[in-house]
Length: 220
Image (cartoon, rainbow, N blue to C red):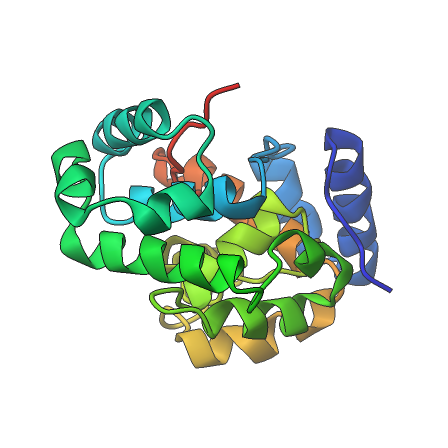
């Protein structure tokens, strides 16, 4: 059964079930408080917003996203696929991000992937489909699944802030690696995404700075 986090109530229910399954999370939740819901639209715009924001400040990502959204309204994969690279460069996209967005747009246009249909697949299968796309790594796939599709079991194991939060929450001798994060989270299936929400919020409470990924703000 695939579970989803679409609403604040969904997140709160998932956290309650997590704490019941793993009481070690009770003091984590008590210190962190209820995490904010970080949903974004899905489809090509949702995935594009994650790619645009990678390795950029929130302000820079927002500015580039604003120009991209204004230039392509609506942001349709066909329009991006046909756009000249020089136009996308003027918007502020790097060569690597242009190549990635065009590759994703081409895959959608030729029917190689249906981003919306991934919501009907288990998180691991959807993750595998996403990472077959050029330029979409495991972290990008997990963030799309969690924030854009609301997959309750998405687990961004490679996220450094999440790794550090796990170290702090469970007093580990060192920050767990991406590979070690998988077994650590097995007890939280099928609600690993809710655990990620909680641990990002715990990191913010302990460290005093934001931990959850900053996505380019989508226009409504």
